Image 1 (cartoon, rainbow over the protein chains, first blue to last red):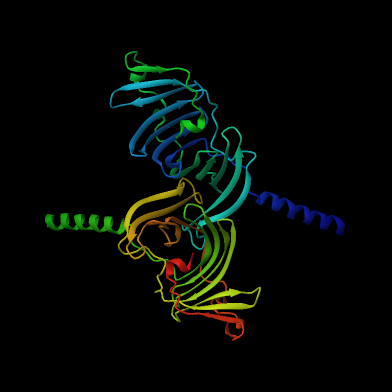
Image 2 (cartoon, rainbow over the protein chains, first blue to last red):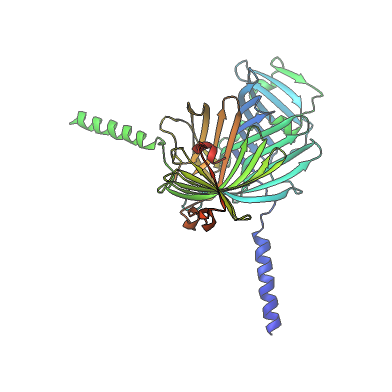
Length: 215
Length: 215
């Protein structure tokens, strides 16, 4: 009887500890928000507004920033299921249509990432003053990079990701103003002029992968 | 009568707008927490545990990290009112005592800093998933630096500060696991061996300022 009691207590403590361990989470399927991207050591700095739909595998990203001394602007719609992307210019009412060879990778902690730390940004001493986050590290052989990813403990919302790519430097993405859900699903529908023959330039053979597509 | 009503409405809208504007806040007088410090472009990386008492103007900081290839370790107690600091070594039971010429500067948004943005880290779509923060920028003529400071909207807790110092590079301090209050106030009392003549090395004429004292 006593042995059974001890076993029950030991098991429940063990299971409790396992349940507490941060898990490799996946972000909600619909997200919209902003992104600050800084790559090779500050040479390019871009602010992005992004819309993310993991169910239908679509991303829309509107980016503005500076690449060295040059201003950059991009309005790109990526339809991974259709294997196509559009670079949209409302100003010229024109479109560049290209093929998209990459697989859609949902926003998530990679299965082989290692948990490094759980920390509080700010303070948990009072409500509204702190945010519990997990930091994960790992490497991605395909793009030859080591990464560090910080996601919220509750909700699995991305906060910061840093990729250190061999021979290229650090790519920092800082997420903010994230909303779960989709305010306007029509952002995933290409404008009419993207189907007009005169206004669409076809780009073939361009292999855009998921990672570079967002930069 | 109508004019008075209009005036009242206009005034209340104006006052409401002013009240909403983020203000130059000051952190709570007692804080303890951790700090990740990264300076001149990643050459030195230090983790610190710090204790901060703005009422009696005392700081204790225990730091460990790497300066280039070398390991660094420091346990420093700064008593700004007594204008003295101690570098404490429990291992050798020895102390270095030095003079501290700097004024105590509380953790706060400088009065001449400009508000740049209010953003959410994570998401406010559900409780516990996001943190409302303010980013302030400005310059400090004394140390010839431009700075960016991010503090929580509620509680005025520091999150990230970046100083870009002329000719030296970026000094990034990332705060986490902050607790309002002081768990053990005895951290501000020098250990007994700091008062033994054999064990204390006196350092005179060293002008440590607040900024370098914490690095």
